Every structure is written in C-alpha cells, then in structure tokens.
Amino acid sequence: AQSVTQLGSHVSVSEGALVLLRCNYSSSVPPYLFWYVQYPNQGLQLLLKYTSAATLVKGINGFEAEFKKSETSFHLTKPSAHMSDAAEYFCAVSELDGGATNKLIFGTGTLLAVQP
Amino acid sequence: ETGVTQSPTHLIKTRGQQVTLRCSSQSGHNTVSWYQQALGQGPQFIFQYYREEENGRGNFPPRFSGLQFPNYSSELNVNALELDDSALYLCASSPPGDYNSPLHFGNGTRLTVT
Image (tube, rainbow over all chains, first blue to last red; front, side):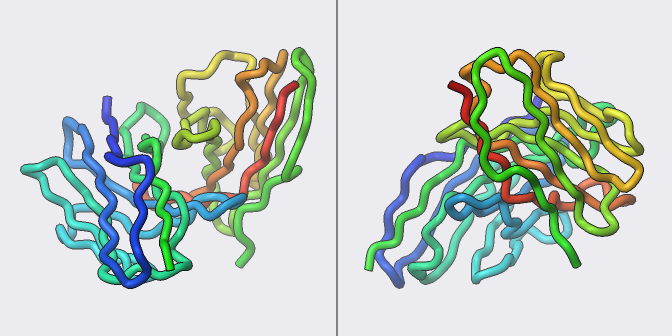
C-alpha cells in the first residue's frame, strides 16, 4: 500500500524567506502526487499535482515541487514566503484501489507559520 | 461554476445517536468521495460513490454508510456515534473520465460527539 510521510509537523519561516516543506512517498508503481493547502475552517485546495509529465511542477501562489524518484521525494518550495501562505499543507499520493478512482492517501500535514 | 457545498457546517451529537451529512458535488462532477479528518491528522478515505453505487471503501466500519443521488449529490450517514467520530468530514467531487484528476473539496462539516 502506498504511504506518504511529511517531515516536520510545524515549520516557521520569516516573511520573504524560502519555504521548504518535505514529503516522501512509498509507492510500488509510478505515483500520482499532490499538494493541497488548508486554511483555517476550510476544505482542501489543490496547489499542484505530479502526473509524470515533468519532474518540476509549478502550482498556484508561486509554489512548486520537484519529483525525485531516486529519493522518493516530492518536496514543496516557494522562494519567498508571504504572510498569506500561513496554513496547513498536505502531501498526498493517489492509490489504486480496485474500483475507487482518485483515492488519496494523505500525509499528516505540515503547519506553516510565517513571521513578520 | 458552483463548487462543492456541504451542510451543515457544524453539528453536535450525543454518543449513540445517528447523523446525516450532505454534499452537493461541483457542476459536471459525477464522482463523490468522503474523507474523515481528525484533529491534527490528514484526511482519511471513507468511501467513494459513482453512478449511485459505492465504488471503494476505506477502513471504516459498516455503521458508516452513504448514498449518491441521480443529481450526483451525496449523503454520509453514521450510526451509533462514538466519541472518536468527532472530526471534520470532507466531501470531494471529481469529473468523469480522468482517473487521477484532482479532487475538489468542500469546506467540510465539523462533527462533535459528546
């Protein structure tokens, strides 16, 4: 079964600093990988997805992620943090599960704080 | 384009009671999935509905059940509520045809069981 590990449940950066959120996956087949963001009291919003077309994936709000098969990683980065980036971020892998399509296995999330 | 809507937004129930949560899928989306997100955790897959039938299920007991209607909206029913059922319940819809298209999530229903 596929799984996702997010290192660091809490990350704090200064406004303008680099954001790096880590995600490692376990999958026996080429994975489909996603990053979602969750603002307080809201659902999840898609940031970006990897579907094997390109290893560097650009998403919304200036975020991007690089798929590294040799490291089984899909880390999320943003060159310059903004106060509005403060939220919880979830990495997810799509699992083949018989009939269910689009079944996602989520990591435990990383709460990003941005200090002024 | 109307997104995924869920009702109610908050709910308080007593242990042993039953609850029904509702979800309207995004326009054009025919597949609905339900996830449970406990406090401080990532969402966990409960089940998925497609063409009004359950199309896959996670590791949840039978007291978690669902329905999908011809207009693709869906309900999640939980019987014999337990304290551990307290969580944010998220509904997500996806369009037909693309096996790994991203899920579109609603804002969730916050269920508290006392």
